[in-house]
Image (tube, rainbow, N blue to C red; front, top):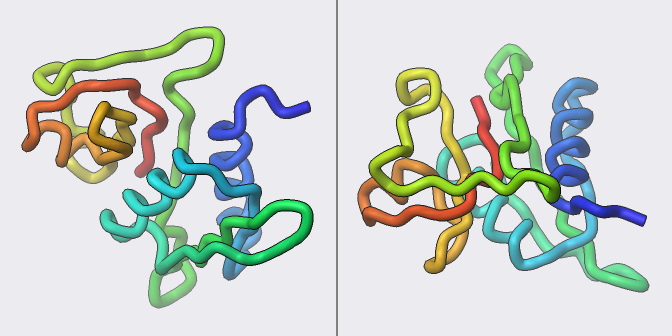
Length: 131
């Protein structure tokens, strides 16, 4: 039984990047769709798609690497966990590594990056950090 599907998703991405897989599959949900859409907008992945499968559909993420095979996603870390939720207001969202990384925030307006949250002046639950 899986207690934290977001942590499972991040672990699958982390493991696939380490062994230089072209894509990774996982069960799909609305929050995961939002998270991969943020990763695509910010340039961390090429694309994603929903794959028809039985008994449930899968989310396929096409991972991105540099011209010489270097990793685009160097570190991916879960911030808010089931045992300890982490919330932040827009003013408290500081740039990750001076703007080289992002935080993914779940807000009342959907899942967005910390840059978008600061522009829209929205706060919410900090799902993860990526750099």
